[in-house]
Image 1 (cartoon, rainbow, N blue to C red):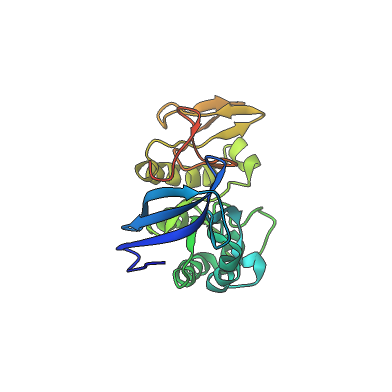
Image 2: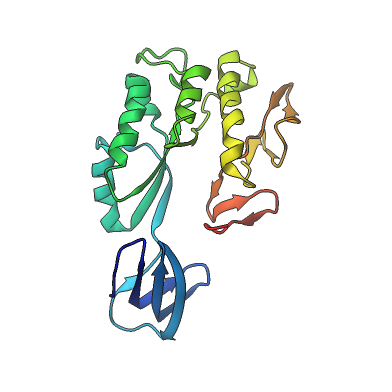
Length: 238
């Protein structure tokens, strides 16, 4: 391997797994400015190292591992996982916003891509007594942090369906902030088996007597990012 700085250029030669094309071949890869600039096919696979895409865990709660994010990352990197989309609601339940900020800071110490969300259900039910409670104000403050990428899973669907002011206020805080980041990719949500997609915030879908805004955001499916406007997978650099 001929390597320079990661923001410069380097080349790598070996066996390459083209997951999208479903092909294996021996080749030479050139990276420029942190992105793949060129791939040259040299022939069929042979003995030697392999280059394969890194895995992305699309839904994870790091604190369930009883490890801080930096140590969790060091455990996964040798196994091929290079990124994780994380909802830190478990640590938020007991430490509040301070716990989320700890996860953000510690995750930044590792050579790993963490995308943390703002936990939407803290506590998850009104019967819990762990200590922390997030309302619209707390969620808005977290989403204003550029290190927080999305509103985490809204598990308390009964509160949404009942028009609970606190939960709808949390969703509204995300609706005010997420569109500017998300671009053309919109979220897919299912309500009673019906797919809600591609609607603007000014004209939310009304289902079972309440208005559910479809918030533009990144949606990760089993085929990667998905553009629900054109119903096709989206490349990482589009």
